[in-house]
Image (cartoon, rainbow, N blue to C red; front, side, top):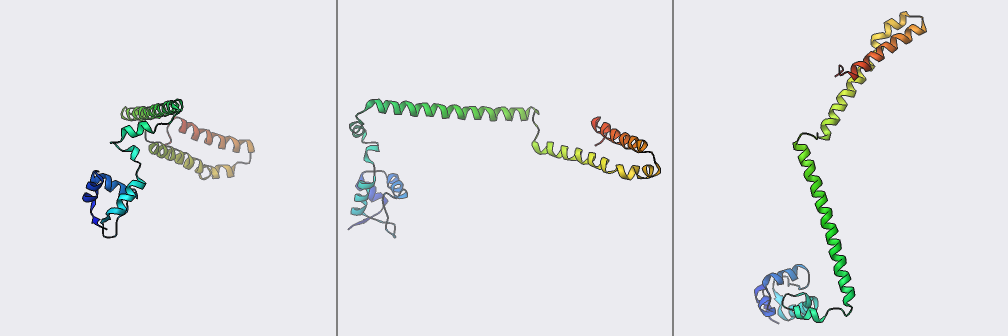
Length: 172
């Protein structure tokens, strides 16, 4: 039972050492704990676990193993090509959308969402503060009034003034 390294096993199998490393990484050939291969065991594993019809030097064997129903094979090829074309079209659509977004951002037509959120928060905070100041501003005047209509008119005037100032941009 001779022990060999990657290069020697590749020479025995008449393959590139990369193919041996690839087979090891996929678990088709097992190494010993010391990193060497048992030559006989590795040759048997190679034959048992490798799809030889997919090798580069066995193209004639693939033709011999083709299914008898050529119509099914053609339909499978068409379906695969069709799926590929659809997937490729989807990728191109997303790439075009991303390019459009990048262009709009550089043209200053887009603003980061965080900036919009911050501006909206500041504006609503100012409006809230103005509304919360109503009781402090009107408490004394309302306490002096005994007429319900006059109290309503004072409150309405202040609320209208606040929202008018907000709409015209004077509350900031």
